[in-house]
Image 1 (tube, one colour):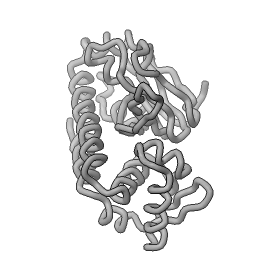
Image 2 (cartoon, helix red, strand yellow):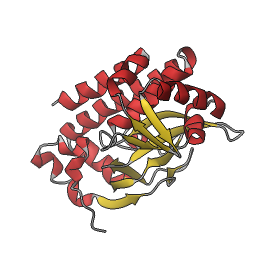
Image 3 (tube, rainbow, N blue to C red):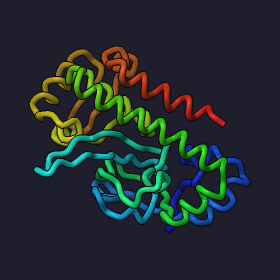
Length: 236
């Protein structure tokens, strides 16, 4: 498959020196990541790691009764499949494409080999894993202590950071599922943000009109995560 992006559009790959990327890039397989695609399920053997380019993947924790809550989002700043480099054959969560786009995938066995062969790649991936864990931890804190309106602002900003436009394609029902709350609560929170001129919502399209205003409305959780990923981008 030919895709209109190079692997370097993924920040983890793009930050590697040529000698460190030399063995990695030929092993990458381009993939179309369509909305709703499930990359892996809980306890399922991880066969591939994924490096999104312009797609967004949600990590969801799924309860035995079928209810689920988003614990992290991954875009072109990262990799889907961190358990592979941590010595685990599976994950405890579901990975599903939240926003369609392109990416590359890499066989789990190949990733393990490259991880152990290249200290630079290993350091980069472990540093990213730390940032991802920070996001997961902060999401748990936010869901417990912050108001729904603040949670919605955080979610919109995290999605916006990983998109190439200022528009999020997502219904209120799906957002409610991601946040693990009732749809009516999301409707009320989105309505307040719209009345304040921060967003415009129509039929599953959420246009961000005032990003600075959203950041002011969001809780501290968003800035904690944003700083961690900014530090990752500057790390060498």
